[in-house]
Image 1 (cartoon, one colour):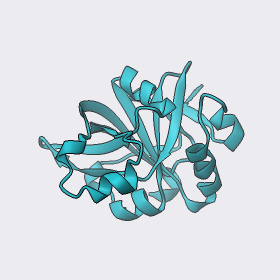
Image 2 (cartoon, one colour):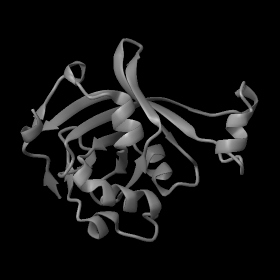
Image 3 (cartoon, helix red, strand yellow):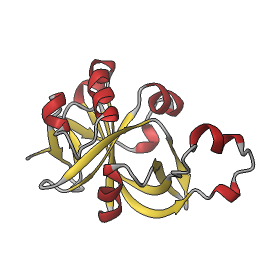
Length: 176
């Protein structure tokens, strides 16, 4: 697997993306693992912000997702964002399991290794390498609006969430 190239390291404070748009409308890939064994999934739930005086990303993964084990077993994870050109690849990745499909082969995305030694894809326009800082599980007894449970968790498969410090931020040269 090749190393990441044709990207510039940027300060996460300099990003101009609308976080609501890139998460909810454009989606992202969450990827974790090693060059020998990794998985990726499409996600639209999450956040970016500041916590503990650090730039952080927040991701949510249901325990039955194949990517869950990879995030659990590794100290870092990667978030990557794409132009609309890759929408069908993200749709495929979000609807198929890495247990059954080789997602990079099926979508044509090219896995590469970042300087922080995480896996991402060379077609991304923006890449965030994250070091896990904290995790927790959503607890049904803590929901104030119980309608959220009925709508989003009919089988009670509550997400685990992770706070990750953004330790590497890369933008494709053509997007700088």
